[in-house]
Length: 325
Image (cartoon, rainbow, N blue to C red; front, side, top):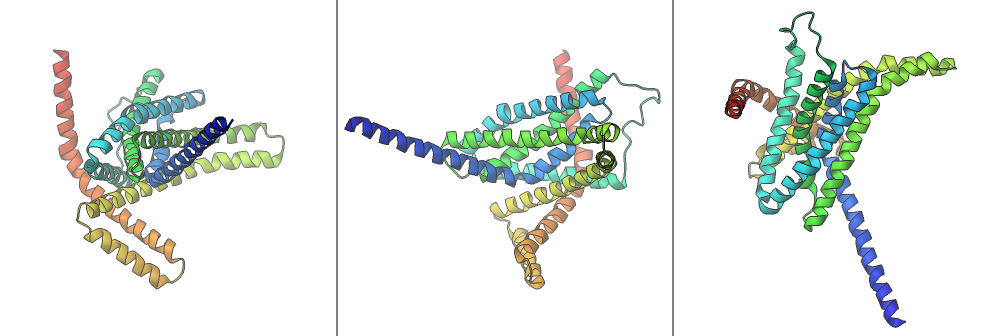
């Protein structure tokens, strides 16, 4: 009997350790996911454009296809690659983060630039050109998954950098929870966004009460403006997160003057305001990080357009030609 009690004590102790580990994993996953908020907001803001122009019946299937591709990106490619690099080349995480941060700055600045210099990608198409819906859907989904890969890489790298050093399996489970949780959050939100106007239209047409029909009409009327606000928030978040990643990375690599100077200015502003100093310091830091991100992104636009993209197209064209032979 004493042996059985001892065994039960051991089982209880193991269960407590397992429960504590589970709590640690969930806590770490939550903190790591929160740090990637800027890229997450951008992901949610970018995706709805890929279902624009399709019949309402195809919107949710398209979002589901993109969500599956996103999960595949995160769990099959990015998670193993991130864990291997973190295990054997931990010093490369900061440069990778900075590379991703530079991409966020570039994309955010490009959106700002196109506000003042709009481009018409369909200018070369014949006026009577009507794309095949199935082909267009496949192309849109493919493009969305490629864009998601870059954003997911940034999200996973940020999350990995925030996970405290621990045993390999715990890091893997934590990162997997972040991957699944963020994917559900992003594409669940996207599904709600793209169907909100249909829901509002249904209330407008089928509502039995005047207040119900008014709510539906309000939703339909508000959605275009809300989507513009979401895109604006996503762009600002990209510039803020991208700029802060670059500045923090420079500080880690030993070039911390700008990072420290911004924080000194932010705390000086907060002290001068005298109220809500913590929030004011954070807001001032975020604003200056965003301005830095915008400046860096604007600098990267001509470099990318004149050098990186042509070089990439040349390499890609040569590889396709080699495959043809």
